[in-house]
Structures are given as C-alpha cells and as structure tokens.
Length: 115
Image (tube, rainbow, N blue to C red; front, side):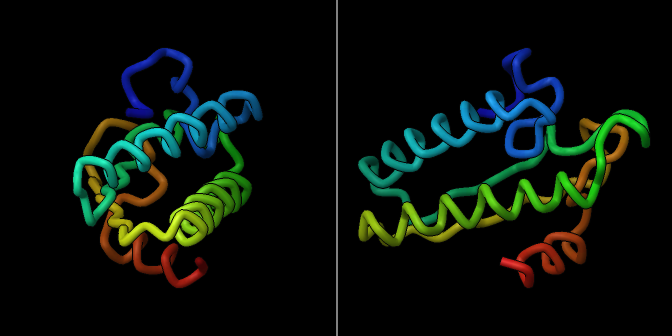
C-alpha cells in the first residue's frame, strides 16, 4: 500500500524525495515476495498517489520516468527470482488525486509501451 501512509503524500514511485521512492520500492518488493508466497499470479499496481494536486507540484515527464524506472526494477526482480508473476496497472480517472498520472486505459497502455 503506497497510499495511506503520510510519507506517500507526494507519491510513492514518483515522489520528489528519493528516500521516499526507495522506501516505496522496498515495500513493493516485500509485497511481491509475499504475494508469490501466497500463490498470486498477478500483482495489481494502483497509482492512486502518483500524480499531483496542482500543475506545479510535480514535473510530469520526470514523474513518468521515475515510474518507468520503478516498474523496470520490479520486473527485473520478478525475473531474477524466477517468479511466475504478471503486473497489472489499475487506472482510475476520478480518484483520488486531482491529476493522476495514469487515469485511463489509454494512458496506461501508452506507459506500458515504454517499458
């Protein structure tokens, strides 16, 4: 969960603070291990905090680059561990950010194309 804890107020994978981004990755890697241990075959990523409340709060290009780096790292980890796990991105246009980075399926597909 990269949403409820106040440390993620600026996002998880796209936070302006590098330490927060690292924490988000560590937390996600632990959750991937747990998901596989419990028999999951799909890991759903909901970027509810990945965005901004105002246009000047975050550089969108940099944020998308950071998100790509995170998914690249997570994908490499899953491959290295030999996990049979797929990733899914859950776009939601109306919650909770004023301007979420991947609000629609079209946005998510365009992002996936870059991975």
